[in-house]
Image (tube, rainbow, N blue to C red; front, side, top):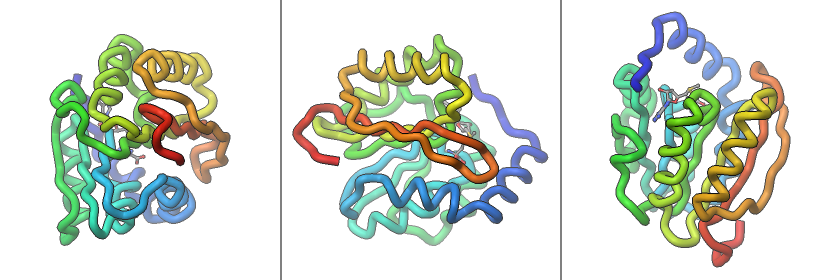
Length: 188
Ligand SMILES: C[S@@+](CC[C@H](N)C(=O)[O-])C[C@H]1O[C@@H](n2cnc3c(N)ncnc32)[C@H](O)[C@@H]1O
């Protein structure tokens, strides 16, 4: 179900982006396993905080910014205006085509989705990855039960855990960052 942000929430995110752009969002984007020609999905892109940096890492590639919220996606369009390797999609995971993306990432998104919806979203994201595709998530560490559920669903969807690390995220506390692969043919 769509949940549109309040003006205050949008303002606070803008401030976090202004204050923590490099240390929070670029830091994560820089670790995405990209060569520069991949097709990438930012699932739950919000106002484009991570996408802003990821688009610059894809000179021959393409970034799809997806969100269920029209308001967040409009803000994202504004932040990323002028970039011609980005497209915007207001949609649900179920509307994504199969075998389409080399890399899908979720930055502080999955913990906000109910367990029932996660059971639909995660298998769908796995299907949307190409064979050998990479799935990267970063979610708050204090949501232990949710994180266990995410890991279980991701592995049941046929993705293999390659690496997991705890990172300290300025302004947001500790987070778990995990990289999964659709099969073992691609090194990360
Ligand atoms: C906490 S914000 C994070 C935004 C961005 N990734 C960031 O780190 O700044 C969570 C975002 O996920 C989006 N979202 C939540 N559930 C979603 C779903 N089922 N499908 C797509 N986007 C979703 C929300 O609209 C919101 O923009």
